[in-house]
Image (cartoon, rainbow over all chains, first blue to last red; front, side, top):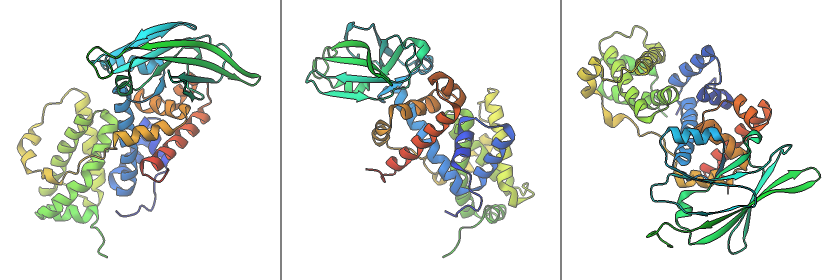
Length: 191
Length: 181
């Protein structure tokens, strides 16, 4: 592929893709992308990442803390969502159905004054996984975590404990502990 | 080494009835038009329709000698894309008369398959990002929230969001391309 004498900066291409630039600038970028093979190839790479992320979120296969806006979009797209709302100190019996696209753990907590939250997941074998500095919306009063559905489907009956921890300059503070008593869907592997 | 013909050279050869030039032009332009379609229509099948419509229109005009400035082929394609996307947005998804007449002339074999990433690899690479980086990418690409809205939602500065996003994409690209362990 021929090289480009005036390559577009990555940030400019990203702003074009996300629609974060004015109409005149967007037109300039588009004309360039239609005439330049090397810049178009870079932009296609970005588009492929974008498409890939969308598909993984839609299929509930990406472990991630989700915002309420993402959940609403999933609902708007007709995705089947199974959700468990748990208060601090609470627990829930949970599973994943064959038709579920996305499973959500909605962990309620008081985030007043909190700037950083970590989630610690503890399996039945005692092994812990710490997810540091999760993105969260302080005003929502909950952290929404989406574990990958394919991994949940492969899980045997087991208990997982989650802890939300506020990380503050003076130390760490427990915001809540939540228990998920998982049972495989009847007839599924591990049931 | 022989250099690839320019868009202008290809356009002139298409006007002269050169079928191999048509195939090369389709190979070259299809991914670019699809990119434009994905950006504006956010739908893969609608973007594929745009590729077909825009290329049929372009080839038909070139064959008929109706692209007066072949060196400005990209501008012609850009104009066609804008018009067709506007029509699609107005709900005119039915195949146009031009497409009905000329779709059979388009060498579909020449249209390259769209670039798709291996989903398993992408998930692995996304899982290696910091939680905040992954969250910002989800808000950007799935929720389609601009950096300003993400900043307000997460209590970050606009510059911080843009930096996190830029860094995350760089790390993701390295990982997907296999250059990061």
